[in-house]
Amino acid sequence: MRSIRRKLLAWLIFGFAAAAVIAGAAIFHTAREEASELFDYELRAVALSMPANLAAARNVEEASPGFEGIADDRILIEVWSPSGELVYRSRAAPPLPRFQEGLRTVEHDETHWRVFGTQQAGRFVQVAQPVSVRDALALRLALHTLWPLALLVPVAIVLVLLAVTRGLAPLGALSELLATRSLHSLEPLPLGDSVPVELRPLVTALNDLLYRLHFASQAQRTFIADAAHELRSPLAALKLQWQAALHDGSLTGDAQTVERIATRLNRTIRLVQQLLTLAREDSQPAGPDTIVSLRRIGEQAVGDFSLLAEERGIDLGLESRPPVTQDDPCEVIADAHGLSTLLNNLLDNAIRYTPHGGKVDLVLTRRGDSAGFEVIDNGPGIPDEDIERVLDRFYRGNHVQGTGSGLGLSIAARIAQRHQLAIRLRNSPGGRGLTASVGGLRTPEREAV
Image (cartoon, helix red, strand yellow):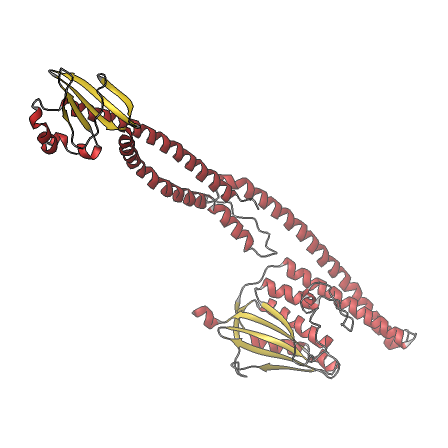
């Protein structure tokens, strides 16, 4: 995977390292040349500083401030008389032949020497130093000039890392903004002064794409809502006509065929209602959160479905699980309409798939600082391989009996997602029944903290 940050860091660090190496080599070479010149000057200074009294030369060499450090530099001093006789030589120094006057590099006994000779009044002074010693001293001096550069390199690399990270921070912020957005949030990205000039074309292009997606999505939702709305009225009229014809005896035919027509008509009406509900949920943002009583919403939902449950012979009730008591209003902060629609869809789905004589319970729950509810039935449940897919639209497993459309649970999941609630389906122990849990409802106590 290609990374802009990695590429920038590689080029910057490599470029800086290459520049540092070239600069270091140039500094090292320059420092070494200058050190060599300083050592040549030292040889000249030592030769010119030799005292005229050779008898006291050794004492001067050992004690005079001008000759301090000569032993460390392994400088050899030799003095010849006008007759060519060696009259003075430094201690513990190998003899060197006399060379011509001036500065030169010579080889003697497989050792290279840097030699300076000068003719003075009544004598010839020659000062020499091993080239290896000069090179070692020059190298040490040159390395001393490189330590600021060696300190600068890691500091510069850290600065490059910080600069690249800070420079690419707007890209990270834009990525995080897009990653944390809701799946159905198509509002344009903010294009304020904080957006760098380099990112403005990208943000503008993204906003244009979001606008086109919003337009296409809105057109699709509008079509579904309009189609569902237009179908609902003629279907309701068709059902009324069918019921009237059935009561006055004008509708004749096989009873099984009539019942089949009624079943399919009811299924079509329910499908249209679910499509209309789904279109409304997709097109409308979540309403304002207020403090509502979860118990009151549950009592209203149980009352609304009591006739359907009674018709199917199902025991429908509202219960509480500790720490929720019977007198606890179970107040939560939520969108009342969305919460009611979610609960109604779960109850409707449970009642329709629970066999005759079954039981459906709405249980209010509380865990820590959040509340929720469960819809528990003793129906056939859902096979484990289908329990995740039943939340998809229009999905109906092979196990399903009845005339559903595969939208009930998907509508509930869509509402839960839009209101940032967690919905979970699980089969009851023993393989009989299904529990639909909804949690994550904020409580006033939690907001106060």
